[in-house]
Length: 465
Image (cartoon, rainbow, N blue to C red; front, side):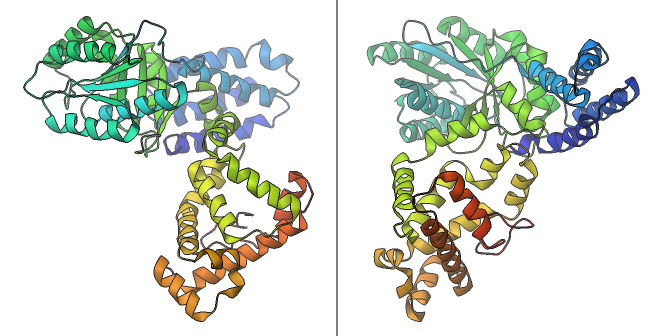
């Protein structure tokens, strides 16, 4: 996750120095804490948050916990991880929807924070993962474009859209939407509200009145992680005005420094419930402090990776490939395309690698060498082939190759590289007939050429595909 990269780099570097030590003195603990403090400040974490965090770690580190530990260095790392989790919250706090339907969710935040997109993302999340019937409505009467945008997004995610217009009053829209949600037997009604470019009294009075009329079960503050320290200040003002129940931190995939995620919970006392990590409507993830802390410290996030795989991998296609491996049947280009699509579904190679322990740097290298776009190129080449060519690439002659490269916007070198890669993989698959997955992975590592994706750009040593 781009948002935590620089913080993760700095922290893991300073903690690596201390985690291998058999003995910790007050001096080397102080030195590590100084580096941790600098890393947090540079990541835009609010000063009071940094001070409290360092005090807590210091009190625990120079106390009994370290002295009694068999491995003081690792114990210090564990303390830092636990305190990071504590700053961000004790665990994922789910939405409280256990009320008579419709459960009303009010979305608040400044203009440009990604409120309207977050409404659609949340609607999709509730529909797909919690099987809820969701209705959405916009009370943003100042921006007709926002109402239109929500209508389009609602159609995309399969949520019911309750129409509103700039001529109406926000309170009337809200009352009508609740009545319509009841009539339609909707489980959840999500209300988008007006945002301003900055906080003003009028905005706050309007949203307070809406809150009073709707009595929402959840009032979520949507804030852009990219605005750093300002995110904390706006969160504080909204929290003083409204009884917030949680926070959605958007644009967490952007080039933010991660400080907002560590500060906003501490300052408001309200949990971050979701992270927005991309433009697409499925790019909303529940916020798990323990998993984020693990990723910040370079320890990966296996639980999220497993959940991604369970949710996004096509089980039928995976079983088909496993069956081919077991029986020794030909691994053709359609199988390779299926694997590339599966990888894309779970966010690409970089997204997978950053969730594996100790692979954060490899994830960055994968992104820099643009492996995901290379996967796209491979897929485009395979799509330009006929079904017969995909099943039997040996029939590809000069004229067929020209047609395929012209159709996919690639060149002959790209195609030849793909064919070579596929041949290597097919050979490995054949060797693995009847053997288990562990043997298969060993075989892949031993037989794959170093760094052979189209475009050639690979991390040192290449990914063993």
